[in-house]
Image (cartoon, rainbow, N blue to C red; front, side):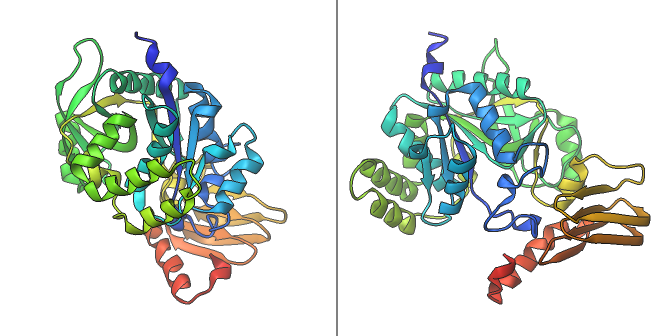
Length: 369
């Protein structure tokens, strides 16, 4: 019985998000998860796919993408991926619909499936610990009507992440806890308090559940989304599948999965983990994750002709694609040079890069997006 759950183990890799805070490297045509050598030799998507293959067979790995371009990139560069397992969303409808539509297609193949939900743009430092945590979460989800999340044991008072508070231990034999509440991104003092208490974990957004449990949860907590997902499920494999998918997305609420289900559910468990996780969400996080020289600089050349020459340059991230980038007497900057655009940004203002993207959209300067 203990091994049976592995026969029903599926992975869902969600490739949503345009990565607007990582503009101008991350673009519509090549969002951050598909950028070559952005973090490591493989793309972030490629690293995520490798982790999924540690847990289940390629034919049991499904994908939710936001454009046909992304689907074509996956098919072109990752031949092990089954084209029929790629679900293209008609429009962005946030993470509740993304994981829900993935569960709908998997449920059609295997009504007893347990789905591990991954985000394609996360960095994981220790794949062995990741495997152990996900297997424990999957076994727990398979053996009961539980929604299971994987929470990271915090190593410092992070103010840029949400937290999950845990209550009593669920399993005496294994490290699994009941979830008490979700907490929004805290200020520093609150985050320090979370660390001191010891029962708060970083919210990674990694979820594991059976398809029956998540559909029941949608039915109970988000009936509007449940209705859309039921329509999608009933149409899979039929001639009207694409039109039903489009209509369902048009009618569905746009909600994060935490808001739609997790924060309301009373059957949520948490598996504590320490596999080293980061969401590369902006240039500041990118700078913090990457290796630095003696002056605290991250210097990267990613195209022909790109190079850097610096004097009295400290704690900067410089990425050059096509020409010389020269810096003198500067610190704490993000400088990204590309053939068609140059970004210069204070590192502490990295979150605001999205404002440039939004303005370019308003001005209809799509050539820069």
